[in-house]
Image (tube, rainbow, N blue to C red; front, side, top):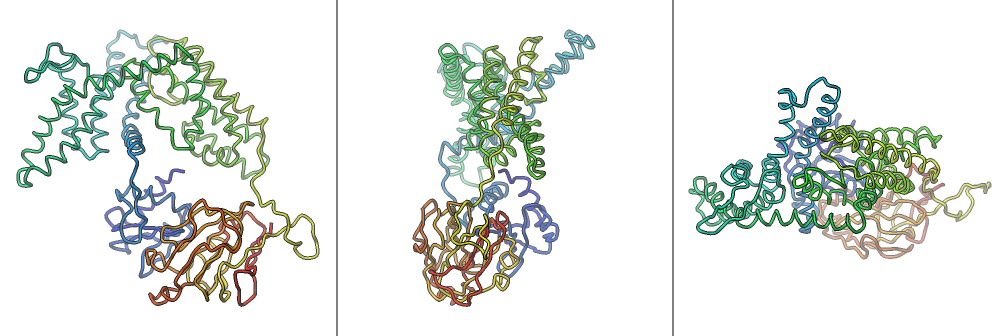
Length: 614
């Protein structure tokens, strides 16, 4: 799920980036260190959809969110430009080179796609206008507007230089200077050039994609090297000019031909696939599988491929038609569920995510519906696959990377057959996925299907219960008496606290460790029946940064009742001034009829402390 909007709202409400000294998180909350807490608009923060509560104390300004804080924190760090390292923070994992490259590529291409999509949509509109006879294709008005489309693609290296320069931390103006130099009449497509006697290959840089990217990457490392070599007093004067003097010839000699070869290789691969399997197969597969690729975070791998197609061929024969068909198939699948469902809450979910998908934003549907119900994946495989197959067989091509509302761009230069076939393919994808989803039906929500440990009360009709053992020996503390508002208010779920009399924490259920905070003070376990437990040791003990805590398990491990999972030096925790109360809550309490804590004043790890009523 994308929390970018939420993070931006939260940053603004705590006083803006300039008011944030650092941000860390524990199992359930973001902990801000603010320069001036008076700037934080606490009441407005509490009104944000994902916020449970706000706690401001001597330790930190804490925004209580829940266990999804693990997903929100990285997004927050990225917006703030933080690595995630620092006091009480989780050490940032070193990003793998391939992952980093795909991330930078995706983030840099996002802004560039805006003018490209606008140019493609404009091309479609101009085609429709010229068809009606309102404006002639030879008129000055038409030519002036069409110059927008031509300029966007011709000066593509300039747009890339700006965006990649920004992402890589390279001076954007120097990056643009290199791009403009490559596109000058002296160099762009010129023959017979040489540099210091070394003959340069003839290379066309306008409309190109890879050469400028390689050049900007190289420029980044040139700048770093010069910063180390040149004295600081002289860097302002000499670093820029030396960066340009070094980068330009290397680009002309090496990166220009290399970028051309990369583009040619990609074109060769797709030509080979087309000649052997047929390009229709790739269109069909991507249209069918795009939601799955989005789910696993691999949706952006196609960016360099289709951008190279536009730069070298002037059109995209595969991915643009495929993703539009897939997006509308997602809309159709969720709409099929909308008509199938009789539950008001489900209808609201399906209706809003269907509209979002229709507008080209499929993530809410994928993460909110597909991941939960799973069958919509199959519906899109059927509908999207059929639509993609039709588009591929009819050799539909895209003339600009647009969404459904830019479908007029498929007209291109009076290629109306291409446009008609794309419209039919979209209809096939939408109707096919909708019918498939309606027929496949909505599976029951995952509930606790446990057989009763024993009947609740004297009546043994289908009401069952699941018993939770105490994780540690100690005195029973009512959750409302726990000195932490997030827990005492039951906002994170119902449960209880235990004043510990021993250091070992035992597994209270059979299940899987689904989360283990790096400081080992909190752990999440999910049972095979879907009950989700959070065991949290102490109040604000995240501030100890792992001191006094030890884990015997790791995330993904299976545990059985009574297994040792954590160890906490309770005496040490108390000596630091922290309350070591062990809190156990059922974080998905709302899924069950009730969660009942025991009334026994003392507990041990062999006794039941909570009853989940199904």
